[in-house]
Image 1 (cartoon, rainbow, N blue to C red):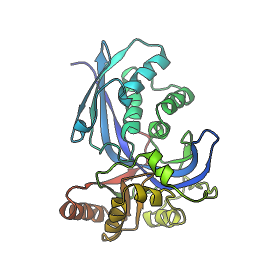
Image 2: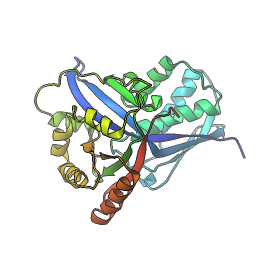
Image 3: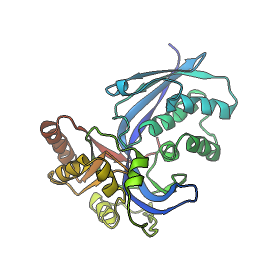
Image 4: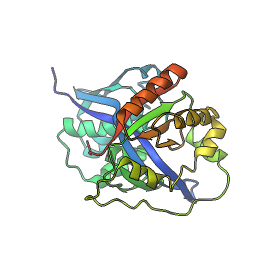
Length: 295
């Protein structure tokens, strides 16, 4: 069998999001703290004469393996960047809901780039050209390629390490509706939040989950209200998860529709997931932890 490599397309959560302005080209300027989960989609690559894509997993039916798929666009973009004629057979195991605001195609594209770097023995490429390739694929692809807790600003292209967060227990819940980002921004009313950059905790600081929550409660998600206008069920999700035992913080992630809950214990996250499946069987839920390692 040919050699294979793989990368996890980790689910991401925007722990807070401030809309701080708008550029002349219409894009909004944002400030956000992005954390990644230990679980997500998986991209597997193997040497091949030409690029191909197979999608499997519980949400495979929601995606088309056509030329416009971000995974293939990322693969071809990396080959062009490297000036190589190498190709790969790519398998995407789709474990996360499609268009759910937790990475999706952006994370899959980034994982494809990482997996191909390993397969083609190009692990030490400079960040700048990789980041430019990532941004050409979408505003969220650079942070997914970085794959670490990140303070994100600009339109998503400005990244710096967000510091060592605790491996907090996390529950992700999605009600199965789409909240297209342009619609959410169109529904947004009012002015902008003042800039309030995330202060990266010192590497020597061992932050607890409760300390992280205290910092996050000083911030908010400016897109919650407009996202609820687009998909009122988000309000129902937030009310339901806020009532779960052990909930320290319940919030919408980015423009939605996935919401997250932070807990201080894995048992609380697992119990909340079980309750969610019983009470809301049509909602998707995943219990996991925040991860801090790069890969």
